[in-house]
Image (cartoon, rainbow over the protein chains, first blue to last red):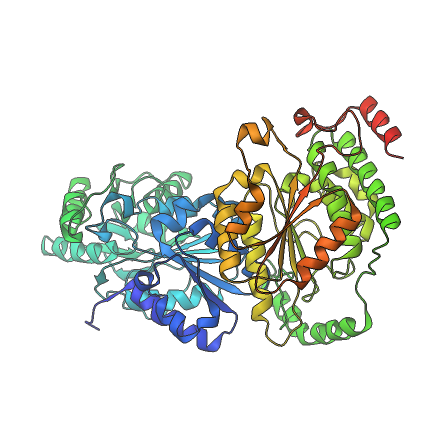
Length: 309
Length: 315
C-alpha cells in the first residue's frame, strides 16, 4: 500500500462502517466534525449523532450518561480540548465509574502545524494514561487507525484513541491489531527504537539510515501506551544495546516515561534516550519544519542512537 | 434492548466467561419474565405519608452523619422533602431491580447530599437500613460521595460539582434512542452553589437544543454555599430568567411544600419539547433549629450531643 491517509480519515471511515453493524454506537462531536471526520457517520446516522457545540466538558458528560444507558459513545474533538479541557469530566464522570466511553481525538501533537501551540496537544497521552481504568491507543498509520477503531469499540471500558491531522505513510506491515500487543516492524540487535503514532514512520526511516552504517535497529510500534506491552520493552532492552523512545508528545509522561518506568522497575540499566517534545510548547509551521526544529525526525533519532552507541 | 453494563465479567477467567456468557440467553428469558411478574415500587402521593417519610429520612441523616463524624448536614436536610416526594410519589422505579432498563433515573448532581439519597434508597428497599450506619467508613458501600459501582440504586458517580446535568442529558437522550421500548424520565438535583460551574450552563443549553422533555432538573435553592450566602459569594439572580433564557420550562416552588413539589413534577411531565427546571426555595439544614440557615453547617457533622438535640426536634 502506498496511498497516504490521515489516521483521523481512517477513523471516520471505520466509524461509519461500524455504525452499520452496531446500533449501539453513538457519536458526539464539539463543532469539529468536519475535522475529526465524524461527519461521515453524522450523514449516515443523523439520529445517532449529537453535535454538542463548542462544549467539550458537556460532551464528555453526555457520553457518560449514554454509556451508563448501554450505548457506546465515541466523543471526538481536537486532542487538546478533548483531554486537557475536559480532564475532570474524564476523571470523575468516566474513569471513576469505568464507563464505556471512547474518546477519539484528532489533531494530536505538533503535526497540527500552522494553528500553533494552543492547538498542538503534547500532554494528552500523559493525561489519559494517568487515569485508572483508561486504555490509551496511538495508531501509527491509516490502516492501523481503522483496525484500532474497531478494536476500541470491541473493548469494554474507557479508551483514549489518539489521531493525527496529516496524511501519513502506511508503514504497518501487520494487518492484525490487538490492543496491548506491540508490533516489531524491523529486527535488529544494536539498538531498539520504540515509537508510537507518526514517529513510527520516522523510526523506520532512521533504522534505514543506520543500516547504511551497519547499525542494525529493531523498530517497535508501541501503538498501545496503556496497558503497555512490557514484555516487548524488556525484550528490546535485553536483546539490543541501546534504547530510544520516539513520540510526538512531551518527553514527560508519555511513551518515553512509560518505557523508563518499566526499565527501572525491572532493574535494567541500558543507555536510553527519549525523543519527543523537550518540555516546551510548539509553534506555527509546516509539520516537517516543526518535526525538524523540535527533533522529531529521523535525523535526530539517528543522532541519538549514534550518541548512545 | 438488553443492557448488560451491570454485569462486570471482564476480570473473570476465559473459561468462566464462556460459562457465564452461555447463560445469558437464559438470564434474558428470566429477566423478561420478571418484567412481567414484578411491579414497580408502589407510589403514594398522600402528603401526610410523605411528611412522615421525610421525617424518617431526616432522622436517618442525623444518625448517619453523627456516626460518620463527617459529611454534609445542611444540604442533605434542605433537599430531603424534594427527593422524598420524588422516590415515594413520582419516580417509576423498583428497588428489587436497580438496573431495570425501563426505570426512571435520578442523578444526584450535588453529590455531597449523599446521606439523604442513601437514606431514601435504604427506606425504599434498595439495601438494608442497618447499612446506613456505615456511611463513610472504610469498606462501606456508602462512599462519602455517590459511587455507581458500589451502591445499588446510584445511577452515576458524582461529587465533582457541575457534571450531573450533562450525564442526565445523556441518559435522557438514550431513552429517546430506544425506539420501541417504553420511554423513561430522568431527574437530577443540583445545588445552588453548583450553578457557579460553567458546565451546568453548557448542559442547560444542550438539553434545550435537543428538546429533552423527559428531563427534569431541580435546584435546591437554599441560598447558602460554603463561603456564605450565594448572593454574596457569586450572585445567581435573576435565576429563573437565566433558565428561561436558556430555553427551559421554569417552575418556582417552596421546596418543603409537598403539594407544590408534586404539582411541579406533574407539570414537568406534561411539558413537551422542553426540559423543565424546578427552582425549589429551601432552607439549608431544614428541620433542626440550630442547623437551619447556617453556612457553617455545610460540610460538618453533628457531635453526639448535637445528634441528641437534633433528634429531639425531629419528632
